[in-house]
Length: 479
Image 1 (cartoon, one colour):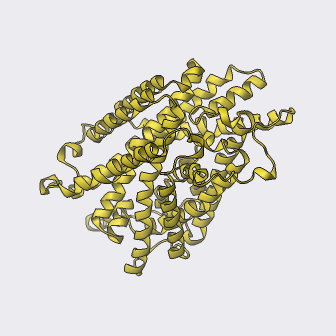
Image 2: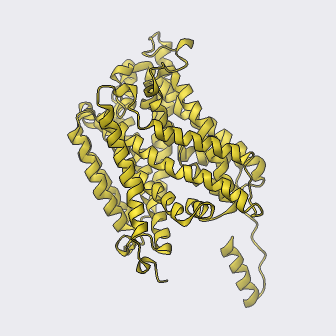
Image 3: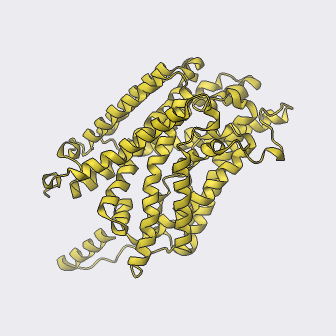
């Protein structure tokens, strides 16, 4: 809007005034589909398939207490203040908290890439040799090789990244998801018994103490990223009415994409033999064997890998770029990390991030159980990201009170209760994440808590504190 205004002003001084371009609106259904495409994924399906029919409950709960508050609260913030989460938290709380929020948005990717690429490695194994899916050394090699290849591609500043990511969604998420559900239905119709019970007695997960709730934490990450889509709220004709419609339609679509494939996996793969990284391909292999088309297994594997790689490239270009822009403006990072290459890409940040990713990837080669390592890094990813959401909910309430007259294209109904629900749900998920899940009861709870806690404290809190504490005036960009 500001650039359009400047252009119009320049035209007035220089000559005849051109008719202002009509505002570009998007349909609320289009926003719903955009949101669905950015949130929905098949990757979490094996994690929830462990619970069978109870996965419906475990997806609905975080959708109600996290997805809805996050969507509506971030929409108000995005329609009232530009600059994203850094500006929201800086104005609502403090610049220090704003830096922590944008840092957590970036730092979660340090744990996200190893967990995402371990899923890629396990899926890719079904193209070469399925037994490699549980091989830690193979997984570590794939994580390291694919990440650095992604850095190389991203550092070139290619315009093909957006196209790869959008096509990857259709090829590697929607088509495999539909195929999986249809095969699952046909599998049951042929008289095969479901590996997981599908009766009313299994609608809720079995209660075995606090550890029974831990897997729900991973679903918070499944729904994360809604604050990025909130920037489109001002593009709706009637945001107050249309944005809630878009979000609830998106929530229905996302739930369908999450729940139905998870159920299909639970029909064919018993929970005790289900891999959290390769469970999706285990299901496809079982279904294809049932129908005598095993040759399709590597085809689906390649399609799913394409979607994951497209998502990785999008994340490589996103949060690190946001951190760079804020740091060049406010001087939060040393000059070395602020440098860009000839293509305007934050290459030094990506390289430093790659060093940490490489170190983390080695854990897959040192720890025998790939599923356990995958789960630990998934929890770390979620918890670091939840810190940002805690700050966002607090900032939203304080901005409503401090700046009540600031124009908002959309005002969230009952903002304070919504933010309170989102805050408490995020805090509960963060705390529960320190408890080992019941499926990993063989290890030491103390070791598990120490690993998860140290990762979050060091990368999520200590590093940004040190950057902020020891920043120098010379770090701030002169221009």
